Image 1 (cartoon, rainbow, N blue to C red):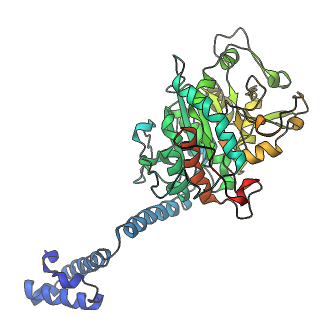
Image 2 (image 1 turned 180 degrees about the horizontal axis):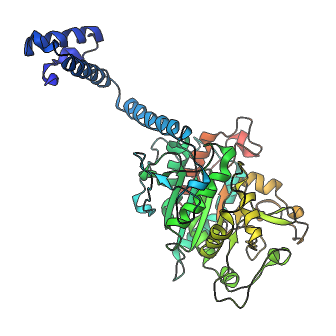
Length: 458
């Protein structure tokens, strides 16, 4: 009833909160009589109502965008505060894998299991970004890389295999990057996956993000525990729905069509049927049972040397098939490196895979070029070399842009980390690069437009 007592002038900019309060008290007294303030319980109800009306009066004066930001930030801050005061103990995490407590819904209810189908994703493509102009220039190496990959990516979409392998794409992120990097991923390559999940500390179904429970703090230095919970969560709920599972950070661009074509290729079928490649042959713990009717577990990525073995470089992400995920969770994830707090999730994953006899496979194409680009294109072209491989010894890579595989399946967009710290690229630029990569690769604009001088020779 108090809402009917507010005339329009009480919501104007000229009325102070004290004036509004006095007005409401007078109106309540005249409407319900002086006895309205005799009952203490009624007084508290009236005061609460008056405070709420004052809040509504101030709220109505705010811009719609400001309201949305206040509301979203309040939920995120509350969510983070609750998480920081609710530690998770590994021994008490109930699930079929016995490793993770699952995820929370947007309301905070545990046991949340979303449908990862990309049809539910609602990315917001920024209108302000002019993709095909020089408003945000790119370096020549990146443009040449995209130009080389674009034709193969287009043919992958046009002529796909009869039996398309189903791929679940997974990204680790935080709520800090929902409106930037995660939104860029959802607006571009995420919809090409058969399923998409973003492990975060805030649930947003429109972005595919889930508030995933894991041990330790929500920070980059605890990436291993987050990824550990991701693999366990996917094992608990989605292992039978997909053939392959690709995991990466929120600064990677995945060419899903190229990845799907590669996973359906003869090279992968050869490995699945018990074939070997150059890397597991030299792996002291690699085990391949040629007589087993079960498909071989596959661990795919850019293999980099590490203590007599190999680990998949985490920048571009890495891919597990269903058999590898099942063995990884059932035989290793719950019994090794359980309490470690570390950011080297790619190394730790490889260490556990070693313990069960699974090695990173050779993912080079027929020309000997690496499909998973674990560095940004300029850094990859100028710095990456096969001289780091001592056993097996790999032939040297070609010079320049010839080093890039036209069958590239993933690219790490860490431009702000490797040689680009002097104001040339920033974290915000990585988001816009995601949109530009997508539109160039999809043929929506020409990749050979002119560069500004300070970007021409990167």
